[in-house]
Amino acid sequence: MILGMSSTNTLLDLIRSAPATNTAIVLPEAGIQVSYHSFREQVQGMADALASLGVQPGDRVATSLPNGLAAIVSFIAASVAGTAAPLNPGYREDEVSFYLEDTAAKLLLVPPDGQADARKAAESRGVPVYSLETNDKGFVRIAGAPSGKTAAPPSPDDTALVLHTSGSTGRPKRVPILHRNLAASTRNIVETYTLTENDVSLCVMPLFHVHGLVASTLSTLLSGGRVVVPNKFNALTFWRTVRDTKATWYSAVPTIHNLLLSRAGETRPDGAEGLRFIRSCSASLPAEMMEKMERIFGVPVLEAYGMTEASHQMSSNPQPPQARKPSSVGKGTGVEIAIMDDAGSMLPTGTPGEVVIQGPNVVAGYENNPEANAKSYTNGWFRTGDQGFLDAEGYLTLTGRLKELINRGGEKIGPREIDEVLLAHPAVSEAVCFGVPHPGWGEEVEAVVVFKEGAKDTPAADVMAFCKERLAEFKRPKKIHIADSIPRTATGKIQRGNVGKAFSGA
Image 1 (cartoon, rainbow, N blue to C red):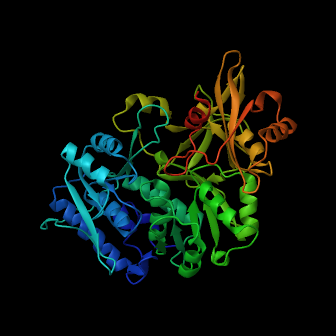
Image 2 (cartoon, rainbow, N blue to C red):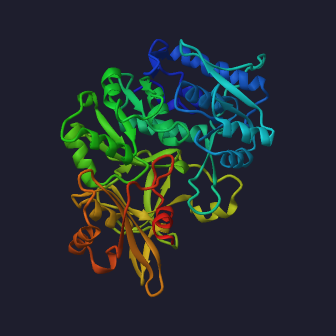
Image 3 (tube, rainbow, N blue to C red):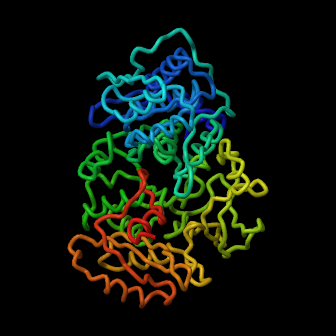
């Protein structure tokens, strides 16, 4: 852990702690290593260039970039000169146009080639577009940017990053994340996993989302370790990269873990022996998958719980020798967690209700959205919208999204319980259940499953019979859809409402 970490309150503080000669970023495909000295120089240089382009504190700097050095440098530089507003580089023109308008972006940063939709959207809105160039020595800059101004250091209360909620219902909400929020979340992650300058993080999550930005990248930079940033996740080369870069941990969604398990079979991959732990976050990790990962990969698997409004991490299963509990997202990590009922009263241990949180990493509210803030904050607690319960040791178990609870004739059904039963079937590799309208019961349970290779001919009736042995009648899926894949968001999340619409037309 880095000395003076407690005084880190901005992203600029965060990258100043490590020794200058340590390696900060590794680009495996290009064979490039960037020192902390060079990295800090690039961040300040780009921040100054942005200031020279007229960016002032609070101005939003949109980026549409693939994973790589440019994405990391521009994120921190934009947060220093103004406010970073990273976009999914897979967005189409209309989507980019919405986010440019919604954030009032001052300018857009893109790679030298590609990103035609983002460029068109910016041009149609009159937003200036600038390309980021990276040379063969690993130095990135804004092509053609003027000079002459120096970006002032940000304050802890400046907005470092603006992101949007997933937008599963209605218009996406803007989440302004302050420097001090990100610094607090980053410190919590370093402390949770005792990260040091000897750690090497393999970043496989996208760098337009808090999981990749905060967990994989910022926490590693604060600890003085090195971040390995492949161009994209590739299951074929993953373990070779782990081995060659001596990665000590990685964080990912269960979708990625499942792909790696599928390729490994029953053999421990070469390179896995160098890992200290594997972190899972951003979607629920089935207990069966956790057990199999630990058995095949041979390292502890630590499930965590995060969300954008908390600058990512809220809880995590601890490292050995402390207990890690399957199907639990662990204990609060520098964050106070409680369970609240609809009226705002706290519920006792073991009683399910809405998960609420408090802590220095939690944002103060959504931007220009008083209605959402009134619904989301009660007596200083942020209402996550997740349902769960705390056990006697303070471990949190999530049972579903409140809006995803299935109400069948007054019986409230937590969909995750049904998912777990479906996933326990030996032929099933993925499963999601959801509620669909029903004229008599109000809602009825349906599900979609993906079968494992070699089990594609399994009849849906077999899965129905499996559920009959393990679930009460009102919880059993009345229809099971068989699919080759389950639709997910760009960050690997499953939105049950969208899955239900895709497979049932509900």
